[in-house]
Image 1 (cartoon, rainbow, N blue to C red):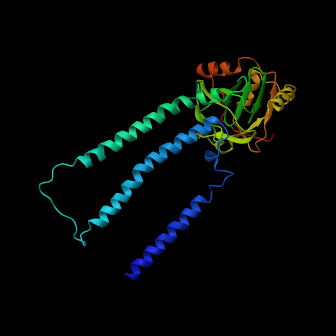
Image 2: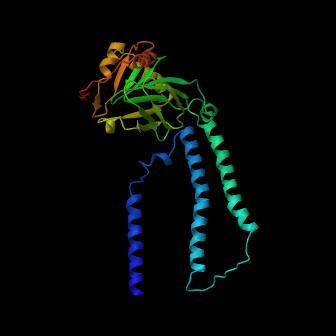
Image 3: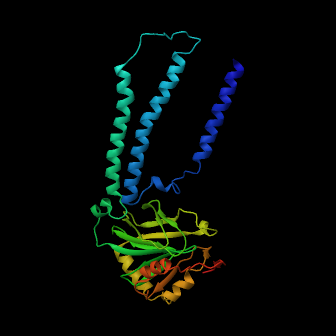
Length: 305
């Protein structure tokens, strides 16, 4: 008996140690999903919490009842009683049918509500929190960079997204090469970015600051470096940034994009800025991909920008 108890104690200590090690990486700075800074990310966290709570409401009591039953009716205690005439129990019927029906009803309600609140094409939480006219940003992925085009401002950036806080931002997204996934954990959920197709996403930033965005889909050797910085600034600071970027020496034409789209690993994560973006670039790239053009080249180039 003593040896068994010692074994249990060792297992308990090992489990506790393992839990500490696993949770060691969940620092406040990196555990982004639990620190939303926008209504879309906040709504997604809320609905995820509801899902987990509902499922735990089933799993935990079931596990406890299982443990209790094994202990209560163990053979050594001899308290179990066999009744050959038993055929039905209304309480059990209500339990095994009522709980699943209630669970489906609750999850169905929150699923319906969540679909409308965080719908990428028309999220109601963004419209409800809007305090300014929306900003349009076209997102184009290459191997392995993020190109952000501001069509009304006629400017573009590489690996840096700058937006005004408290302003709805509407994205149109496509890829010039392979499928990627656009994801800014603290601001908006992930959505696939596919070659030759256009998807949409929307967000609104509640607090000015700097947030990390990245591709959540494997896309080749440069995937680990395919990150971008999202800076949310005041409306005044955004206007100043736009005015400054309008004087950038680089111009983004169709031919300039062909060079930009070559496989490039931005090792140091230094952004590029473009002025005088050729109108219709986003639609042109979709048309080119659908017509069979391949932007990628076999040899990757490491950027030292």
